[in-house]
Amino acid sequence: MGDQTAPEVAPARPAPEVAVVVVNHNTSDDLLACLATLEGAGTDEVVVVDSGSTDGSLAAVERRFPDVATLGLDNVGFGRAANAGVALTTARAVVLCNADTRFPYASVRALGEYLTAHPDVGALGPLIRFPDGRLQLSARAFPSIRQAIGHALFGLWWPRNPWTRAYRLTDWDHASERDVDWLSGCCLAARRDAFEAVGGFDPAYFMFVEDVDLCDRLAQAGWRVVFAPVAEVVHVVGGAVSRRRLRMAFEHARSLDRYFAKRYAGGWRRGLRPLIRLGLAGWLVAVTMWTAARGRTHGHA
Image (cartoon, rainbow, N blue to C red; front, side):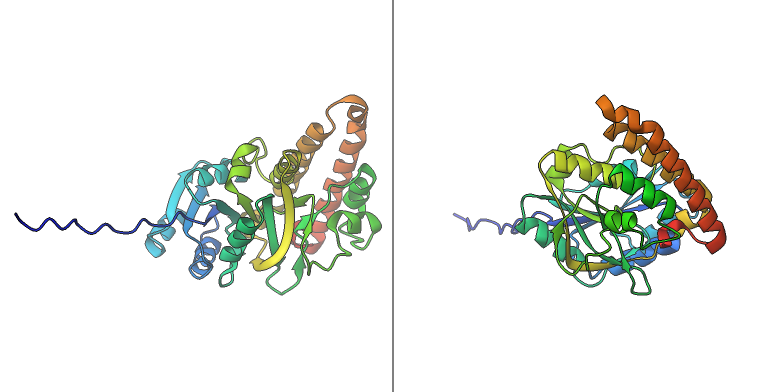
């Protein structure tokens, strides 16, 4: 009889631990810079979802980063695009980010490891800085009606006002982890089973506030929403938003109106809607004036 030695079987590849989904719209240079930083960040999967770009973003990615998975969509907004990207991954943790995010060495791995070690955490936010090193206040509280109106009217011109400090958690140094109400979607790590259990981002939000809504629904479903400075990333704040500042301010106000309509939909709270809309109108006027005076988006504030 001949040699009956069984053929060698390659060991099974471990399941991906953490994926990154990058949502892009007409920010090719930012996107390429983001992907370059991901090469050392410790990610197992990377997916780029392009939302209706006309600047050749996907072609640039395919040339420079042929191993990165890509998906081209119409301009469907951040939430819908992010949901589509998550559906293409299999990792147990997914980092969702804008293309203007930069990831230091091993930062993605640290976020994935934290979620693995804390099975009750549904969403995790890293420490985020502007390129000049300033802290970006990316973890915030759900404001009361009084805080929301005070922040809307005075936040840009008088940033140390008591309502904005309470909403932005300004008096906390961000050096320690804590449970928070919501995290900025510019860079947010989500546990897959938690994200899928609540249906991901609500696609009805074109952009802005989908992160607030997601964190709210995660908390209602029993998941913790946590800020932990186990990783630090840089958020440039710009790209598509900076080029269309006034339109983006309007989109932000419209998304806020939708969110408050859901949050204050029933009972006596319904009567607060006119007051909330008045506050939003004041906020939109303040943002428009601030943007015209400073020549930059309110996201830089």
